Amino acid sequence: MIENPQLEVCLSPALLSLYDTRETIVVIIDVFRATSTIAAALHNGARAVIPVASVEDCIRMKETVENCITAGERDGQVAPGLQYGNSPLEYPSDFIKGKTLALTTTNGTRLLHMVRDADTIVTGSFLNLNAVCQYLLKRNKKVLLACSAWKDRVNMEDTLFAGAATTLLRGHFTIHCDSARIAESLYAQSQARPSLLDFLRDSSHYRRLSGFGLERDMAYCMTPNQHPVVPVYNGKELEVENIMGTL
Image (cartoon, rainbow, N blue to C red; front, side):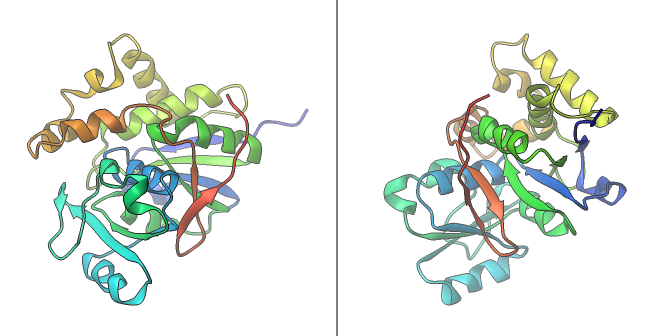
């Protein structure tokens, strides 16, 4: 009998070295807000998203990449020198269509650049939850759901997404990973609350971003399946992978 491919969850970038990413599809998760912004920008017509490690490198993209918008944050706020922030609501189709978004963030783009030797790197958020899970089912390869966390500290929202994805994929993957089971248990607890956002109101990152007046951003980021795209990293840029089917 052929065993299903393995699914694991990494709860923090600080734990990434403990996982073998060879021949693995790694899903980068940064719900508040990098991977949500990536999904929104690409679904709304961005040509590509370039994940950039440093603010300085991101600023330089404006001079070297045609029709480029520089964007991102440090510690939740727009970084000095960048044109725009890290909000999925900043990139409607009438603004972003046909443009390239150079994006640098505190956690998500950092983790993406940390991954080595993966078969494929994609980005996931609640905004594209079903599309990402359908892609993983179609590919039928080992999966690592990698949470960006907050400066290496485990956070609720990324763990919650990992739990939602694990729940949807259970039965199609072999799951012997305690982190995956922890994430799935957290997601199950959230289903007893009025909404995913309500479940997160006491979390550290919700309180942090609320201090900057970003409640609307967070509410949007916790709304599933608004942007049914799969952003795939080609080593330089994130572009849309076409995926058909429903869960």
